[in-house]
Amino acid sequence: MESENAWLLLFAVTLDLLWGDPEYLPHMVRYMGGLISKWEPIFRRLHLHTRIQGGLLAVAVVLVSCLAAVVLLLLAEGLYKPLYWIFSTFLLYQALSLRCLAEEVLMVRIALEEQGLKQARAKLSRIVGRDVSSLDEKGVLMASIESCAENLVDGVTSPFFYGALAGPVGAVAFKAISTLDSMIGYKNERYQQFGTVAARLDDLANYIPARLTVFFIAIAAWLLRLNSPVSVLMGVKRDACKHASPNSGLSEAGFAHSLGIRLFGPAQYHGQWVHRPYMNEEGAFPTPRHVNEAVKLLYVTSGLFAGAFFLCAILWG
Image 1 (cartoon, rainbow, N blue to C red):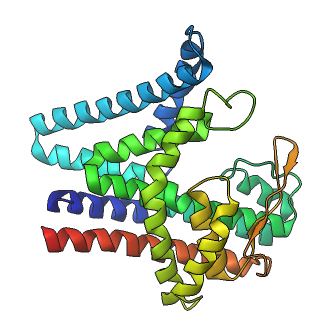
Image 2: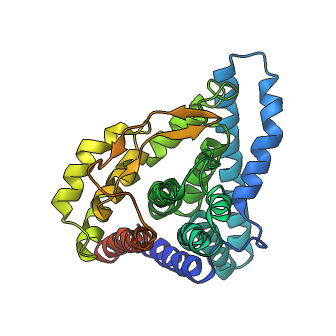
């Protein structure tokens, strides 16, 4: 990571912590989502296998997103160098979602305590893709912590990782892949074939960051006096394979063993119950207190992850 890129990332992280993701602000993910929605029917009309249609859409969205970022930054640099720094910082900032994730998770807990189960389910539906209508209080709390753990990688450490390695364009490329997966990477009748490439790209993009993140979760758990790093890592080794995703299971198992609670378990998707074994089955069911601890774990893990990259930039720069 070059020293200039390190400073841009530092400013981006600071912006995210101070500002979050206000809904009134234009966001590149919304533009990517709009592009995917408009282009899907076009690519589906191609006389090709459904999986190839979806693959071409995925490649096109990533390339166009990166090209737009490159053009924007080249124009800014040509006009005024500080303008390039501003746009670079802004793109990196929009790729991160640490404060937004923490706030969304805490809003579920607050709604549950102050407004009841119905409102808590409504808040939870903003951050999970499953059917929340049948969840009881324990299920709502489990799902919110699972989302916190999973999106730690997808929304914080992975975009930071690619921003550190490849600058703003790298972060934009990852965000395009992540948005594709969230929109067409489902294993249902409509996207089973069409979304295969998008889902595989997302698995590949998160592969290294997810594994790095686990070690920082373990260290954060120790710093917060929740559990020892060895216990967390041994628990991850045992339980991560229970998740269908090669990446999400790592962070979710890390949170389960750090917090001493059980996560995962049976869930309802598209009206059908899916059997999923519990992670840390001997752990207790989560309480509202565990949501607060999960958010602390989220922040400390993110800080350690970013700090390690900044330290490398200082030492090598």
